[in-house]
Length: 256
Length: 349
Image 1: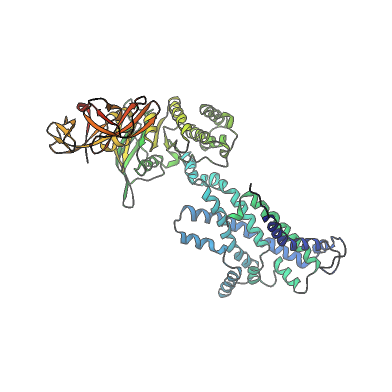
Image 2: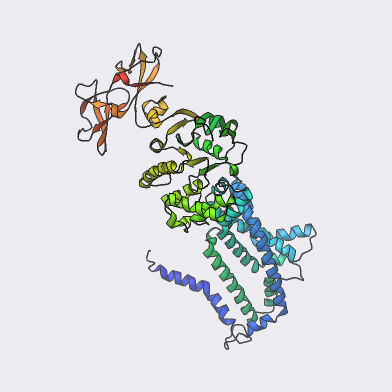
C-alpha cells in the first residue's frame, strides 16, 4: 500500500465537504425546535408526527408501489436485454441504443415521455410513472448485468447442454445463478433510484396520486419544516443501506 | 457391442464453411473403441470446429458423422452419448465441486444414492475427494482441470472430447497431467479425442494422431510413424525438428542446388522434379572427413545434448544433435554427414 502523504488532507477535506450537509440534516431532524435550523434540544417528535401525516403516508404508499413494480419489471426485462445484447448481437450501435436511456438527462426523458403520453391521450397517473421509471431502470439493470456477463465464461450454457440439460434448464440452473450477484445489485440500485426520483415523476404523474418526492417538494414550497428533515433523513438512510448492500454484492458502481 | 474392427466413430466427407472460408474440407476419419486419438494442427486448421461438430455445438454443411454406426447428427447435443471437456473448463461458479460433477447425473434423474456413489468414485479417481465442498474459484488450475474431467467422465460417455485440455496449465503441471490423462484413459476405458496445437502433447499421449492443415487431414498415423515417415513437407516440418533441404531429381539421385548429392531417388520421381530431403538432427553426425564441410552458425544447449546449426551452403543451416561434451563455438569449421541412402525424400508442393 502506498503512503498518502499530504494528499490525506485533500481526502479529509473532500469527505467533510460531501458529508457535512448530510450530518447537519440528520442532526437537525432530532431538533425539538419548530424552526428547522435553530437548535433547541434533542427530540424524536418529528419522526412521530410524520407517522400521522396523511399526505406523507399517501406519498410513501404511491412511491413504494411505483418502486416495487419498476424493480420487478425492469430487473426481469433488463437481465434478458443484457443477455440478448451480449450473446446474440454483434452491433455496438444497437448496444449503445439499448443502454442509453440510463444516461439520457432526466429532464429530456421527462419532457419526451410527457409529450408522448399527451399525444396518445394517455391519462396521467401512477401507471404512467411506472412506465417512465421502467424506461431508465431497464437500461441500468442491463448495464449492470452486462458487466457481469463479460466476466462469466460463455461456454457455461454449452457445458450444461453437454451434460444433458435442456435449453430452459440451462438458463435457470446455470445462466441466472451465475448472474445472480449482478441481478440483485441491479435491482437494489433501481429500487433506490425510483424511490427518490423527482423530475420524471413530476412530469408524468397525475395530480391525485403524488409520489413521496412530489409531496416533499410541495411541502418545501411553504418553507422547510423539521418534519422534512426527518423524512429526508429516513429516505437517505434507506438509499445508503441499499447501495451499500448492492456494492458488496457486486461492484455495481463500477459497471455504470 | 460393436465388433472388433468396427470403428466407434466415423466421419465421412465432413465439410463446414464460414462465409467464404472453408474451415473443414472433406474430412474422413475413423476412431476406434478405447483409442486415445489426437487432432493436431496449427490454430485455424479446423480441428476445434470438427470437435464441436461431434459434440453437437456446430452444424456441418455436408457429410455424415456416425457413432456406433448410428447417425449422430440427428441427435441434439444434450442427448449425445458424448461429453466435451471445454478449454476454459466451464465449471459452474455457483456450484461446489460435488454439485458440478453431480449436475449431469441429476439431469438423468438417477437416485440420490447412485449419484452419491458415482460422484464419490470419480472424485477418488481424479484425487479430489478432499475438495468436494469447495467452489471452483478456490481451486488451482490443475485441480479445476481434474474437476472438469471428472464431470465429463462421470456420465460414462461413449466418447470423451477434450478441447486443448492442457493449454491453461503451466509447464510443470502440464507434464504431470499428460501422464495423468493417459493413466485415466486407461483406467476408465473411455475413448478420448483430444484437440491440440502442441505436437509434443499429442505425440506423448495419443495412440494415433490426425495432423490437420487448412481444414484437411494431412496424415493419420501413430506418433512413431508420423515422426519417422511423414508423408509431406508440412508434416515433417510440424512434427519435431527436421532439416528440410531443398533439391531436385537428377537420374537416380537427389542433388542440392549446387549439384551435391543429398539423397536417392528411390520412388522413380521424374527428372528435374523439385523435392525436399528431410533429415532429423539426430541422424546428422559431426565427423572428421564428413561429406559436407561448413561453419558453425549457432549452438543451443539442452542439458545432455546440444543442437548445433552448421552452414554447409545447402540453402538452410543444417541442425545436428551432438553430445554436450563436444564443445563447439560459432565460427568453428567442421564436417557433417548423414546416411544419404536413407534420407527421406518428399515432393515439394
